[in-house]
Length: 148
Image 1: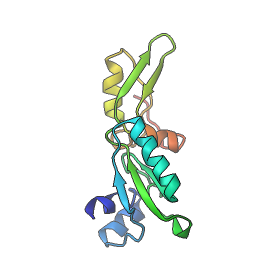
Image 2 (image 1 turned 90 degrees about the horizontal axis):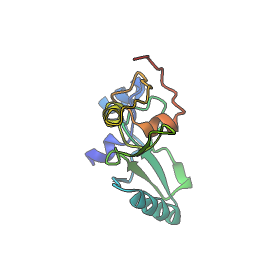
Image 3 (image 1 turned 90 degrees about the vertical axis):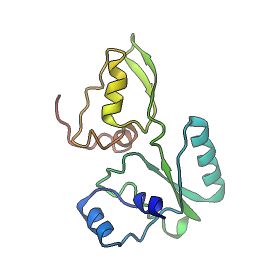
Image 4 (image 1 turned 30 degrees about the horizontal axis):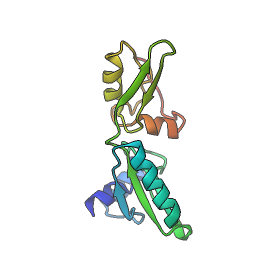
């Protein structure tokens, strides 16, 4: 149950207060931790067939309710798809400066991996240490950035 509770709220002030008070009315029915793209596809297919909502979860640093599974009666349940185990840079093309990166990588770990290729993302939101590439993409990089 502790794992499901940890995946039921973000880090906005109201989320933190509600968690401290034990007021977490929207808890996922299941937390899954895929380690490969194939496993993500399997989870999405199963949830789609079963009418279950899927809520992606990276660092849990959301301040806009993005990880809270408020799905109502439209779905048979909710699954939190924790991408934390998918945290690697898979490919780097030095010519095009493109990289294939898994969504669950936190900012510092991403920079560490890109540094091995002599590269940097050059994107440092305030939540850099606590948020993931997938979250940056999902929110269209809505965090306030700072320059390195």
